[in-house]
Length: 357
Image 1 (cartoon, one colour):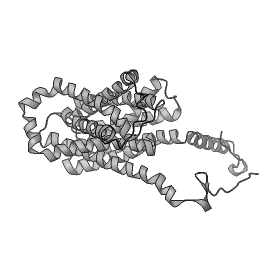
Image 2 (cartoon, one colour; image 1 turned 135 degrees about the horizontal axis):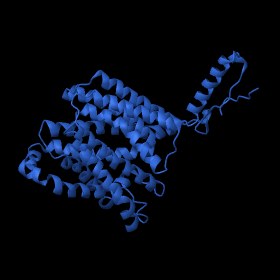
Image 3 (cartoon, rainbow, N blue to C red; image 1 turned 90 degrees about the horizontal axis):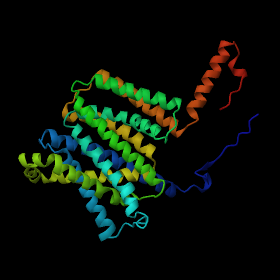
Image 4 (cartoon, rainbow, N blue to C red; image 1 turned 60 degrees about the vertical axis):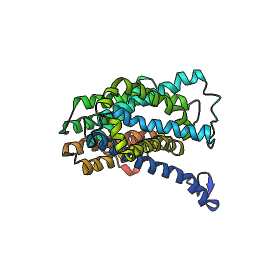
């Protein structure tokens, strides 16, 4: 006999006292952050690809540095000049903390942006967005190796599906480049490093979107600038890329603005929702970008790629369901196994009650 009581509460508040304005104030910032991040992220991908392929701007690091430069300048103005944004953690971010955490996080961000942008010189937009489905598998593997994630059946199954799906999508890619794939995987190594460092940082401090970018953007821009002087300076001079920027200033200013919007909205999505929401929205955004890349640049998408990408997305969904509802998959699998056993022994299913383990 089960004692079932109907609960008419929402978020710990009785339904009769539910405040619609308060509820909207809770969900609207998160929805807006997700929409802004999705639009800005897809837009900067397509814009950068346009500048590199159709405008022959062969300096990917210069492009991604524009977003970091704009982010550094805007956050400095907001926090130090206009003082409209407080820095409550200023006393905690001392020199030792900055060198130990902020600099490595900024350097990792720079590495991810630089190598990720170079990937677009070798691979089409559609295939790169499919490759991004592999990111959760790389992140999970790194977290397991660092003993920050436990090995579970759900984790193994989801990672296997993601890897096999990505392999199938790669097999179906007509413009496959091993150099492009290597660059993408290297960029993901930097991304995993950044994620791990930020996880450690957020265990100690809580940053607002602007404050977090205020600390992270300058070292990231500094690392990109150093890499540009080493690897792209000759290209910038020989191909007169500064003249190309002067000939189309609006496009390059837009690249800087979009970079800033992506950076600050990423922090906002995590702050107002969760890192899990960012992953889920990012997966939907990547799928939309695959279609946009097909329409904009005429990138071919094969049947094998669609099947492989679908397998990867299914693995990603299983992983996130397992993270959000850790007992759900275990309960469902246990329920199914119980009924299979009953059928095997000829027992009527309806006569037996099952309960979650």
